[in-house]
Image (cartoon, rainbow, N blue to C red; front, side, top):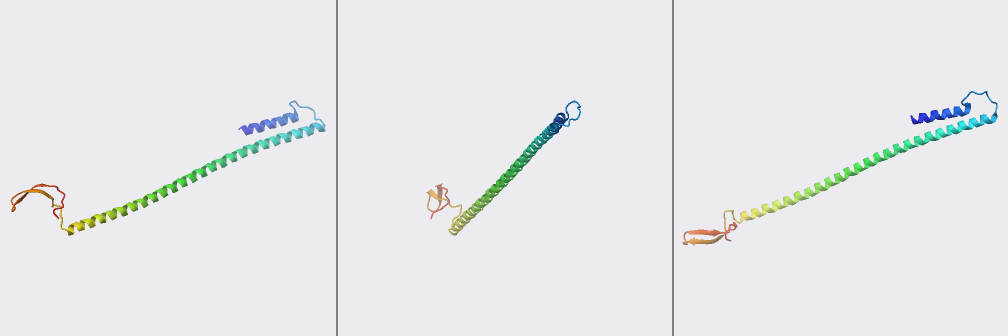
Length: 150
């Protein structure tokens, strides 16, 4: 809209300067003709320069927008790759924890087998004090450690 108004005003200015506001008889004056031609060329040059300035501004804005989109895309890829590396590191840490847990379970199973080989059960208690006769002892107190007497 603004561009069309500028063009229309420039054309009116050229026509107004070249033809005048009132009709006049044609002059065979070479200087006036040359002046009008130069003014027309100047106005056309100004309009072309202004048009090129607007076009270059639009192209620069489009290039800036494309650069911003490319930067966002690159940032998104960087974030994705960082999250992917983080997930990979977490998976490695989980695998190490699973190995450690399996090792601990094997140690516990080995210790349980060793206890079973000693015939030590969970019903044994360490006797602290007994009363009664030698044939019929009665347990008065125990520490409940489950180790029995070794």
